[in-house]
Length: 326
Length: 282
Picture 1 (cartoon, rainbow over the protein chains, first blue to last red):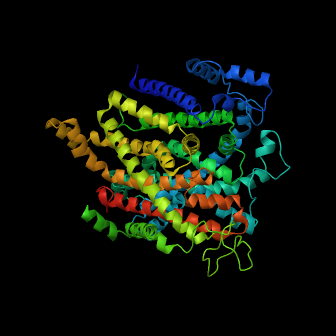
Picture 2 (cartoon, chains in turn red, blue):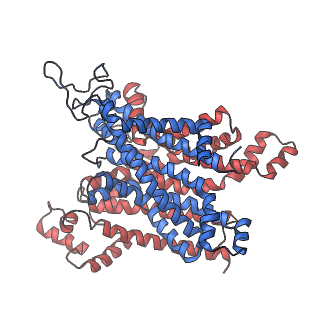
Picture 3 (spheres, one colour):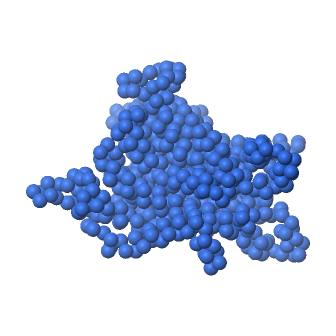
């Protein structure tokens, strides 16, 4: 087997082990929560027979080791239990919330990456000027500012005072629509999306920007940049075609880390903007003691991050010759 | 170290960072003298009415909350909490993160595998929900918030410093030290560690920022220490009271305080990076 496929195989295996450890951690975390596990997992409002059925389904009448196996089995089969609050299967509950989160997060990260990479490169290129100081300061201001506070101020200013944007949610009240196109392919959705995307991307911009800047500074000191200058290439050509391309690698790894980091920000963003996504779902689930939903959402977020980290690691390993496949 | 500090003061960004940080430290030290009122005291007008969300005035320079409390005094009181959370977490995170990274990066093999798999698991844990659940389990106190922050935050420091260690360890001077018969711990602490100090300091200041923002976020979600007034909790109260519609004086100051303090850490870290890393300095 070649070094590369060995490396890829090993990383995939490692990610599976990581997922397994996360599942185990989750099992114990949700079982040391205060209160009797039966009251935690069984809704007291249910009739007695239904309560017993749930107890049996989760195996809460069995010893902990058996519960653990049942838990793993249920998770592998995609059975996450029934939500205490909506009485729907957890999978369906999460199903309602996953797409709005993906939409908001996708656009936010895309915008942050594009702006971050370009301005990071510019900051490096104009090193030591006022322009660089301004770029870095603005980026650091928004990275420092709590995302929920920027959201509150943006809402106060742009939504409540100037009436430019809606004050939250994903569509006008009463316009709850079904189907992908009806929900996401219209101006109303876009109108609701803009403000959270602006607030979110302002928060994330600094990460790719600063990494791009450092990477770019290193690349700019390399000989081939001088050589291109000597060849008489235009400065803009050197920057965009040669320096930026070579400085992108650390940003690639950053993308996965950024998404991991973004999940925390996403929770706050969704709370402030009343966005019907999994971030707000998990906060509400924890507050309402809806443990099946909280547990499954937690796992889902972890799953996403682990898969993305695997992806970034593979890319990094394949692209950077200094990392050996061992 | 003295030289570094001097250079830090000469760098504009670093100087601003140090001044802002010093300002907050002074506010924290002298907060008993700076307070205008007890932050929890409820104020009434002459005819016995609660001063509900009153705009800034001579008496209440940053106005009042819905419960008639003085916003200025609350923000002053929150400074100590923020600095305590920030410094304590940053020190713990940087030490733990750097040591794990040095050991993993240098030894490689199964040691690296084990530590990096542990890091991967921690990376798979969503930070805020984890903190919320931890606090639900352990009870809402400032120490439990710090524990939750440290348990997760070391991952970033470890990851980044480890990859730096990986590149450093393949450099010629490390190979030379090895050929000269230097042992692993000598190489790690004498030859590799000095090269990652700038990065460790950079991530230390970042960790301070993350910790302060995380405490604020946890408090904003309603899981703050009930006995303390933190900036995040002020914002939580303001959010619950719908202050964003008409009481800007209650919303802007605590958020701005968080931002400035966290930013001062970032400024210091960036300037340190430039000074300490010879490759990056001009």
